[in-house]
Amino acid sequence: MSAVMVEVGGIGHVGHIGERGDISDTAPMRGGDEPNATVLRAVRALADGALAELADDIDRRAIYPKAILLRLGELGAFGLHLGLNGRTPDYAAAIRAIAEASRVCGATGFMMWCHDVCGVYMEQSGNPALTGDALAHHAAALTLGATGMSNPMKTFAGIETLLLKARPVAGGFVVNGALPWVSNLGPDHYFGAVAVVEAEAGTPAEAAPREVMFLVHCNGQGVELRHCPTFSAMEGTNTFAVRMTDHFVSADRLIADPVRPFIGRIRAAFILLQCGMGLGVAQGAIDTMWAVERQLGHVNQFLEDRPDELQAELDALAERIDALARTPYANDTEFLIDVLDARAHASELSLRAAQSALLHQGARGYLMSSAVQRRVRESHFVAIVTPAIKHLRKEIARLSAEVTPA
Image 1: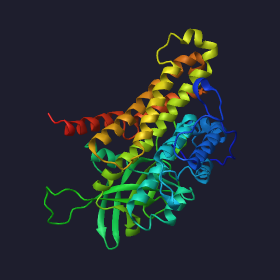
Image 2 (image 1 turned 90 degrees about the vertical axis):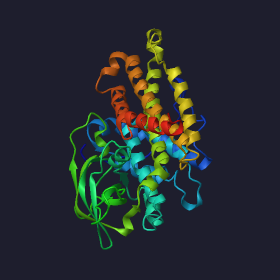
Image 3 (image 1 turned 60 degrees about the horizontal axis):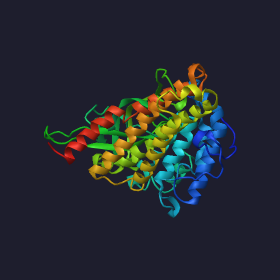
Image 4 (image 1 turned 135 degrees about the vertical axis):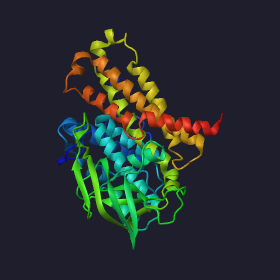
């Protein structure tokens, strides 16, 4: 995915796409108190206006919507889940903001999640250098962040091994290795990463590995961004392979040491925020089904997964995710199973909704220029991005066995 950037303008009409695609300015907003609802209305307007105009170019022409992300920061979309300025963190609202963007452009929703979850790393680090002004600037999108946690999350689930190696030195660590793809990057961006620390001489072979988590600045010494092969969708996400060669990580960029307790604390928050992508892509697909209902409903009525049925399922899932989002840092096993299951359901529902939208639209949905085609490919991404459906099911099976051992 290449790195073309474009600047776009402001926001348009505030509307709500509800059942049967009708527009209602008075439709209720989920996601917390009135100030947060105001942010969500502004995000919706931006999505329906400038983002909608750019969505196809983001998907296929590798246009990186930097101005959209900056505007989202100005609107307050990236601070909803962070306890800044005495505000109560509202994860439900943050998820809804991601869903509003994903309804129009899955790639932008994904980049919002990348930035949001990097804010979680910074806030929860306890490192004064990563909170305070640094976190405030992040929440306002004065700086842009991302997450390089696909490999660590798979490693902690027993699927991969860590690709980055760290060597302790005076004042920090020297890191070497490469990550195959990290999204929402640019020369002035940063992202969270994890490396395994080289064992000291004399350490027993059976000793648990030590890992450290830290913030990587893309313009840092020894950091190289390399273009990835072309993907089937979402080319404008500025996804790069990242190589680190003797990259020095100072103490002021440390997020966690040790890492696993930290990941255990933020894991549910990490996954819950991702649910916004699935909710939004599914809603966008349902909207396109309603768009042809008046013309094709007489024959579409014979299809399975009709828009009213999918909408009811999506609304119920959104309510379930809202409830889980009230306690994003709970870590009891049954809660984590519920979070993983909700995330899997969001993936599966986005796949079904996008597939059904294609069948409802018929030949017009088979055109490459159709938004339905884009949503089909976006739904595939929702299903495979870490944690993928298979990863989620693996973790659900493992945790379920802990709750009810054989």
